[in-house]
Length: 227
Image (cartoon, rainbow, N blue to C red; front, top):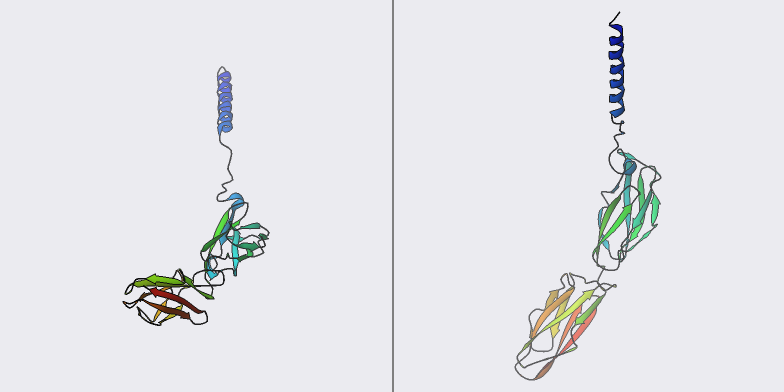
C-alpha cells in the first residue's frame, strides 16, 4: 500500500493539467462572413446601366438578399450626388421579393449619371447615360457679319440643340449662297451639334448672304462682306 500516495499525486497532477489545457483553449466562433448581418445589396442587372433622354424618369431598382434569399423590410436610401438628378422616394423598403425601387429623374445635361442605393450593410451603384432630346433650335456660332478680303474664305458654323441646350447630332443642314461658293450644299451636325461650311468670295468687293436651314428648325443667315 506504500504506492497509494504516489498514485493519488499522479492523478491530481493529471487533472490539474487537463484543467489548464481547457482554460487556454480559444472560445468557439460563429463563422459569419460577408457584410453586416450577412445582407447583400445589388443593382438589378437590367437597370444597372440605362440610357434615356435628359430630364426624363427612369427606374432605380436593387435586390436585397441574405445567403442568396430575398429579404423584406430593409430600408434602402437613394442618393443622387449634386447635379445628378433627383429621386422619389429618397428611401424605400425592400418588398417580399427583396426588391426596393425608386423613380430617378435625370439631370438636364447630357452625360453619365450615378445613383447610389445604400443600406446599413453596404451599397450598390446604378448608372444612366442621359442623351439629348430632339433638336428644337438652330443657332449661329460667331457673328452675324463676317468681313473677308476679296477672294478669301471664311468658316461658317451653326449649332443644333435640344430644348435644354444640349447639342444634337445627325441634323442635316442645307446651305445656300447669293454668290461666291460654298464647299457643300448640305452638312450634318456632329456630336458637338455643329455643322460647318467654308464660304469663298469672288476676288472683288461685294456683299453676300449665306443661309443655313434645317427642317423644323428654321434658318440662320450670315452676311459676308468682301472688301
